[in-house]
Image (cartoon, rainbow, N blue to C red; front, top):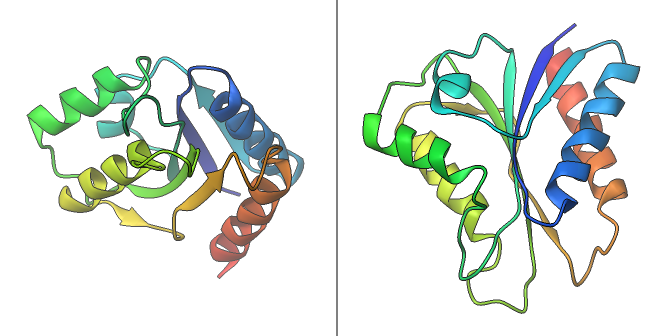
Length: 150
């Protein structure tokens, strides 16, 4: 079974809830899952989890939430090689904003540039179309589990 680490960026709690829902589903399937809502750069850089999932809301004009911003800035500044990291991304946003899901795209670009390998396409959840992201998260977790089995 796999170990999954969720690094969460949340302001109003939606991304936190999405990460906790995903972690609960993984645990019910026999995997181990940890949710970290105060992540630091070393939590990502030194991770020995099989998969690291960044689950983030987007605030303001495409910005990363305050609790996740230090991780992003430190990793961006340090530019460590992350070839050993397999990752997933869950990005929550509101499509009525110009920089919809901008925080997720910032992380996607950063992780890609440092050599991390995506296990699935980024899940983008639009608050306008999906007020309760639980079903979208469940479908994404099912896809993640299928990728782990192969």
